[in-house]
Length: 157
Image (cartoon, rainbow, N blue to C red; front, side, top):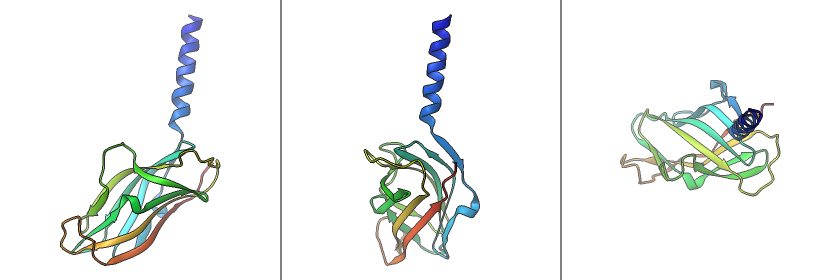
């Protein structure tokens, strides 16, 4: 009986330790480039050497799609830069296109690899360039509509 209880206690501790700290995000934390793009989210989960962020990205344009690239995105905790990936390995677009007035939901992972990441620091998700997609094929990049779209989320205790 004692070993069973000890096993359950260890399993519970490991299970809760792996989930990380979860922060609900508010609509006030959204970033908008008027007439182009809006980024908001529902939840951020800090897991120490990485964090997950549930995002919603909306194309605010009336007539043409927007395109940006996963490899041209970056993420930060404090001043530490991580690599943006789709949270589910092998799933998701490398070139992300969003139709006019469409909202897409993404679960991004910010991975810091072997870096020593501080426990504190504001979170940032950065899209280097948002491009026009004038023929709405989801691939062709036109002119740059927005540079350095930075979504900043305050650290919570």
